[in-house]
Length: 259
Ligand code: CAA
Image (tube, rainbow, N blue to C red):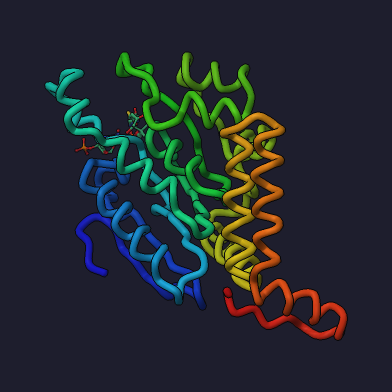
């Protein structure tokens, strides 16, 4: 896959694809073109049967320093409405496969929001998360007020969104925003280790489980439990479920086929 602003390696590790945002001079600012390429790459990888998990990363200095501020110059509300950038984000949100963010350096504004669309986040000790849109007299528009608040709670979310405070990787871990902090030379490797752990399992069960966890953010408890129950029953329709149970009984490793 050839793109201008991202590098895509469909088999970075066995059954694991890597998307690397590659606009280093602008600290990986997420222009409309960058976001369009990420969307297209993720859609292709999501439909590629040889890929079971996708890692999204930047470089050591920046995962992404937010939406491209220079593209905002001279724009009014109706221009922004017509550009409709958030449909791209909605498409990324619908990715069926596990999406892991490997973050080093700045993850700010849209960068932090993109990280929060991912299912799991591995960060280097140098990572900094923030929603500094308030400096521009705007506010987060790609989920920053909603996903951040659900992840870290109201007090810290308010401080980050209203006061523009950046948090360190260790603070992000403590607040429940991310999964793990590792030394900078290990963050990508650690993301691969996590992805490998998931790719061992049935892709059917992984997809249904991901969908169910995400449903927790969109429903009441009873609605979420009903959704979970249907997906739980759905697992029993797969050959993988028969294999998983049989392998346990036979005391042998299971061989899952994703059906
Ligand atoms: N958009 C466009 N260009 C950006 C950028 C952005 N978000 N962030 C950095 N750059 C560019 C800079 O303009 C600079 O380019 P030049 O060399 O051509 O001047 C280059 O990247 C390097 O940046 P700095 O010189 O500023 O680097 P620094 O190390 O001194 O500071 C920083 C780093 C603190 C991240 C600083 O660049 C910064 O504050 N960036 C903006 C962060 C921000 O406000 N993000 C939110 C954007 S709005 C948004 O994301 C809305 C949304 O919800 C979708």
